[in-house]
Image (cartoon, rainbow, N blue to C red):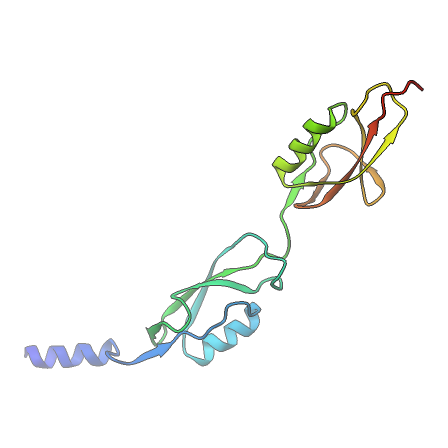
Length: 159
């Protein structure tokens, strides 16, 4: 009876019947799904990680179990994907703040300082205006992370 039970379990659990997880890292989700289906593996997208500009949007960044691991037929493979772009960030209010403080505030939220220009104004090194792609923007505008923000500063001269 025990031997019969063990033999039955071996058949039911597909004992010693393994498949290799294909290497789908860097491949777009639609192609990755085809490869997993061909190998009789199921999948589940569990997360989108930080955006990686070197990979296309919705490409597989990580998978678990890892590539070339031995798994049984119909095993679920968990996928982490590259998001479609950088997440959006609200521009902090840096108007009437010194250049030094404005730079650190922008850096803290993930934005970068672009071109700096000066205008006649008594507030030396004081932010008078913020611009994106040549257009004036207001604090609170939503832009992608790592966007360069141009600053217009006072030069310390009276008008």
